[in-house]
Amino acid sequence: MNVHRWANAAQLARAFRRAQQASRRDDGTAVGLDPLMAWPMSLSIEPTTSCNLRCPECPSGLRSFTRPTGMLDPNRLRALLSGPDGIGRELIYLNLYFQGEPYLHTGMDELVSIGKENGLYVSTSTNAHHINPERAERIVQSGIDRLIISIDGADQAAYQAYRVGGKLEKVLAATRHILDAKRKSGRSRPHVVWQFLVVGTNEEQLPQMRRMASEWGVDEFVVKTAQLDDPHDGHPLLTRDPRLRRYDRDPSGRWQLRNPMHDRCWRMWQGAVVTWDGKVVPCCFDKDAQHAMGQAADGAEFRDIWRSAEYHRFRESVFSHRAGIEMCRNCTEGTEVWA
Ligand code: SF4
Image (cartoon, rainbow, N blue to C red; front, side, top):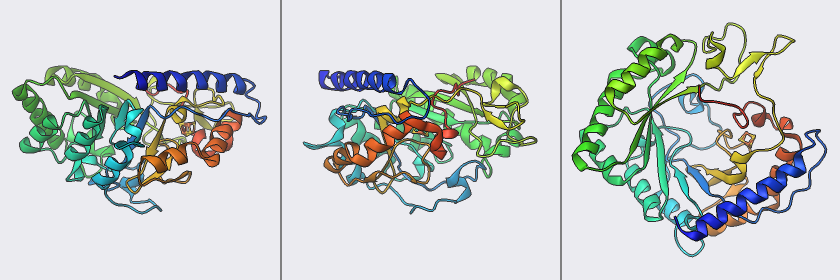
């Protein structure tokens, strides 16, 4: 990583500490933040909103977007990252994922290559239903650094209870193809992660999944608790084991995020999310782009949006009264999501 990127990241961190000091009151009074002069160190960009599955807590799966749906043009990614005003100079991390299944984008490997040409650590997350042996070789050759494969059950019944329309055998076959392609190529990347989204319908399978991950030889196995739009008594996705969920009943009996909600947010501070058509949103919880700060066709436009008055006001709102923003009330910032 070059010095310029480190310097920008350090400037971001210093500015965050100052903003935290300003927000310490946590009492809802307005916070006057200094304008954020550093650039983001991470960006998530959405390859596509399309998805082959119908997962119940996901707007792609539910086909419930009010925003336009489509595929990212590789030239938009190039224009955002490269060139004199390209934001790729400051970024460290590029996540080619937001909503949708990235490998439905036929140019996904080209998108990865654009990130790598800009010197970025590139990751994505996939349901792994479109990875045959040839695609697996292309994925490994693309240079992607981290490949997160969602695998939410040790048998078909548990898997499809959440991944509606999915086939566990396809996920297992894709894992095998990727691991084989990686071995054949002699490359150490991608770092292959099995991510187990733990919900009420699969929590009993956690020990079995841990054993499977070790037998299959993936690089990492992670257990993620689920974000639920409306946690309530009897919700089929709420786990019985409290350690495997984010929510508890409060004294009045309502289900609430377990951790206290402080008026600050590193996630939104250090990065942004760009939809396939260029809308810049503060974080990955803004799934339908309700808080779009603008639409960026290239790096120069992105920089204008990042330093805009509207973005500044949004940062001030989060640091003054985070609970006043609906999406910020059910988000993982400040919450432990890994079980
Ligand atoms: S939803 Fe969460 S991550 Fe997004 S801006 Fe609000 S507090 Fe930050």
